[in-house]
Structures are given as C-alpha cells and as structure tokens.
Image (cartoon, rainbow, N blue to C red; front, side, top):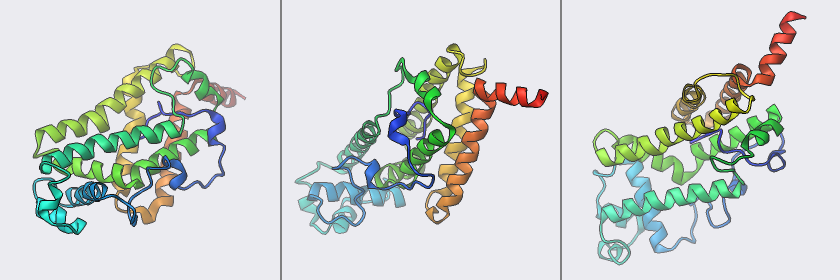
Length: 253
C-alpha cells in the first residue's frame, strides 16, 4: 500500500503534472501479465489462479478450473505445483517479491534510512504529490498487487491465516513503518509534535479507503487522483512545520 516511507530521490520524480501508471514503473521482467502471450506454463498457472482466486475466493476455485483457464490438463498442472495451497503460497511469495522489486526500481529508501528526513525536505509539494499518485496507481492498477489485495480481502473473514496476512501486510506493517518515519520527522523538527502512530493513521486511512472506493472502477481514475492529491496537500498543511509556520505568518499579516 501507499506509504510515505517510500520516497525516492527528488531527481527521480520530476515528471509532468499528469502522470499515469504504466510499464516504466515496473522492472523490465515484471510487466503486467494481462494480455501477455509469452508467459511460461508455470507463470500462466499462477496468473490464472490469482485471477480466479480474486474473483471467487480461494476455497471456491478448483484445480480443474485453474487448469481449464490455462488451457492444460489437470494432470499437467501437477508437474508444476503439488496442490492448490502450493499455488497460493507461491502467488503470495512472488507477488511480494514483485512489490519489492518495483520499489527498488523506484529507488525508494527503506525505513530507517538516516537521510529520509532531508529527502522529504527536498521535495516540492508537486513532486511529493506525483510520487504519492504513482505509488497509489501501482497499488490500484498493477494486476498482481490489486488481485492479491482482493483475494485477501475476500478470504480474511473465513480463513484466519489469510486474514492475518491481509492485516499484517496491508495494514499493520504499513502503519508501523509510517509511524517510524513520522517519529523521525518529529524528532528532526520537520513535523509538529504529536503521536506518530496517530499521524500514520491520519495519512493512511484515507488512502486505504480510496483504494477500495476506486477498485474495479478505474474509469474514474482522474477523480481518484484528484482526491488523493487533496488529501496529501491537507496532510502536509496540518503536520509539516514549514507549512504551519507559513500559515501562521500569513494569518498575522
């Protein structure tokens, strides 16, 4: 999910205003698979299984249905995977590997980077909004990430293990990482004093809501981006010290 811990160097993000998610934000061997014809049989199995799981739920899909979607015999599928759970485990593992490679391709610093505060300072408001927009669109439109999120959303209530993966991956880890970065911003005097975890909630909760609001509704992408940008502007206005000083000075003129 979108996280303000994920900030590449400024020079990487000097784009035009209207940026759209496309292949340049994905590592060379990580192109979105929809419509691809050059996948191996193993890759097709994973992709079609994820598509079915995200539409109908893990329990409702059979090995036979996966094989049928790939266009192979059921017995042939077992040459690649032991069972349905093996397919699911591989999907989860390789989707998160894809996620990490994408962040690396964006040169996103990891949580704990001692330079992350100064990097944030170097961002113009426009550059930071562009960064947030493209990470948001990655989560919204990337075939693997979006389908895994839908799968885990479906299964979280009926499958305790998958529910834990959903909460850990898309909620708890993101909030914890954001809180660590925000605490660094507070300690360095870049953000106002406050509870870092609550600040993380204030940033991430609207983003999480927007992902669900526009999931499967990408025709309204422009509206989603505008709502996201308004949220980012408002968040910076509330918590970034420089913005607050400007606001206070203006109010006393």
